Length: 111
Length: 115
Image (cartoon, rainbow over the protein chains, first blue to last red):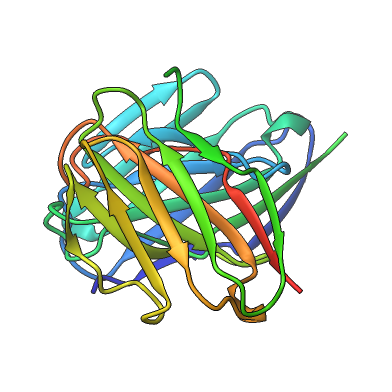
């Protein structure tokens, strides 16, 4: 199956800072999703982004499928942004199966 | 319902007992997934349903684990003869279409503790 690597594994920032999280994957995919797991364990789907760029408020994501990476940007960080950010791609790349997740980036936003 | 619903939210059981975890997906979602997350770890894929059938059972850790889905809706994950290493949060997710072609929506999970 496809391998997913996320970086950095941990990130500590002050409130108001900007950050970029990276997701590399080992083979071609036709789908990629970003999730946020808050400190209470709830997983929220942030973006469904097989290619191109999407924005949602202070968050945006870009996937360059041909180069096998995706980036998640968080601007003007708030303490509520803390948690673990996961990217996920289809197991076999094609989409007709489950998603495999990276190990995540653990983000801590300090007041 | 408004979201994916899982029950119970917490389950403590003795080693060797069987447990049943329930997932009620978002209405109209045809695909349903079970994942497991151990403390501080990422998500481990267990099984995926499209409708009532499970084309991919490769993620089930052992034959003590089984899952079924009836009526294209509610799913049950059963763990027989639980072991301490089964302790984890079991997460269910659903999506509108087959496989990974649409966003996944997760429930709040069932935290299983095997003593």
